[in-house]
Length: 107
Length: 112
Image (cartoon, each protein chain N blue to C red):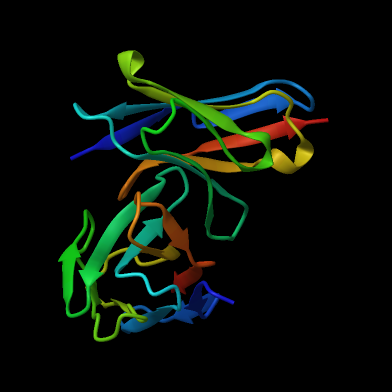
């Protein structure tokens, strides 16, 4: 079965700093990949998805992710963190999810 | 408004009681999923259904049961056989396309 691994359960950045959340997938065939965000006590919201149309995918709230087949990676980035970005982020290859990464943004 | 609803938001039960969590969607999606979320463990798949009257076990189906009698509804029953039922439960649906899932707001179940 296809799976994803998120590296780092907690990431802390300062407001305005680069956000980098790491995700690696295991699949011999490029899968459809997703990043979701979850705010406390809420459901998950889709941030962006990779569907093989383009390797650099732009999502909501200024996030983007780059699919790198050679590295089997799909890392999530945002150039400048905002306090409102503090949440838990999940990488997924349907129907399996990574363990999640909690992003803390310090003022 | 189209979306997925889960009810109730919070649910409390005594140990030994079965409890049913509701999940309804009006997105006309064929596939529906139930996940369990525990701190530090991400989302774990309990059951999923790709079509009415059919469903499959996920990774942690023991102690749970589901039904899919209508396209819109996919209720989850947490039975007394589930050894550690206290958790946050998330329902999702998926339409035709690339597999993106749409999530409900979740139900937090506490069993004492």
